[in-house]
Amino acid sequence: MRKEINLFDHTNEIIKEMQEGALLTTKCDGKVNTMAIGWGMLGIQWSKPVFVAMIRESRYTKELLEKTGEFTVNVPYGEYDKKILGYCGSKSGRDTDKIKDMGLTLVDGVAVDVPAIKELPLTLECKVIYKQKQDSAAISEADKSDFYSDEDYHIYYFAEVVGAYIVE
Amino acid sequence: MRKEINLFDHTNEIIKEMQEGALLTTKCDGKVNTMAIGWGMLGIQWSKPVFVAMIRESRYTKELLEKTGEFTVNVPYGEYDKKILGYCGSKSGRDTDKIKDMGLTLVDGVAVDVPAIKELPLTLECKVIYKQKQDSAAISEADKSDFYSDEDYHIYYFAEVVGAYIVE
Image (cartoon, rainbow over all chains, first blue to last red; front, side, top):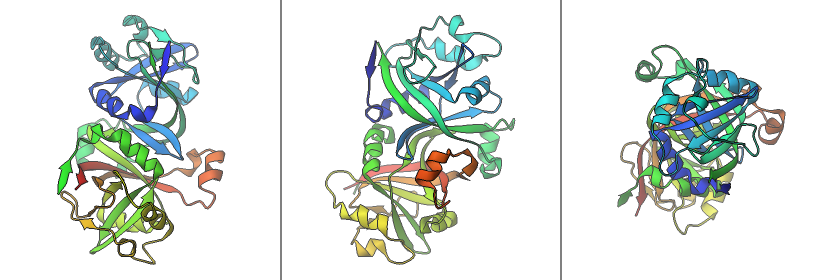
């Protein structure tokens, strides 16, 4: 079961929860992968509701996302096992099946061919409408030193939020 | 008087109001200018609270912002005169003093040298931490046709929100 929500009635809690950790899930060739995220932005571009994801170039998620252009954002809503975020943030989907390892419950997406995750039930279904690699020359030396010492820059994925609901 | 607010307790109303219209204000060489905005994003980048503004290359605000890197976002909060947004969205600060024309009440900023506007009292003080011109090649033909028929692309200004309050 899904309870539809108005995205802009839940932005406060989405951003607050995301700072503690959320997941970003992709699916390609039948394989589902998820990664932990702590940053991102919500708002309006081209009169569309958008979520802006930041994915580093080295990430497995980047490979999958480049092929499909679709993802879900999976936000905690109520109690959940914090080990999920720790595990999904420390392993790569290149090496292991994180969904299986953590016993996560997948629920088919509606407008995207990527599932929701019942354990982190507040779900945004997202379709990429614009993407752009960061311009390293525009990042201050301080931020470079703090976040890009390995030159593993982010790609901004601006995605239209085509569905928002809580899995029940 | 200012009432400090927690940005992420007010994101819902900021984004909803912004869709109806808000202002983005700059100040350079003692001159204050403001423009209407309807798009933008709020969230987290580099563990900092950020507002992402989209300013077209042709805009006077772009010239001022390039010099100072600071702006305020001015969001309606309660009753206000809707003519303000209509006027500020239809005139350029190159041709007229919109603040004077509309009789807006400026209130000095705290962490930025840009004022708040009492008539649109929910205020974000913003300092640009990253900027990037849009990559026109990454925009779909449909979105180009809808929003960039004149090739006047946006620049994304990612700004740290260094203050958030309601002018009282």
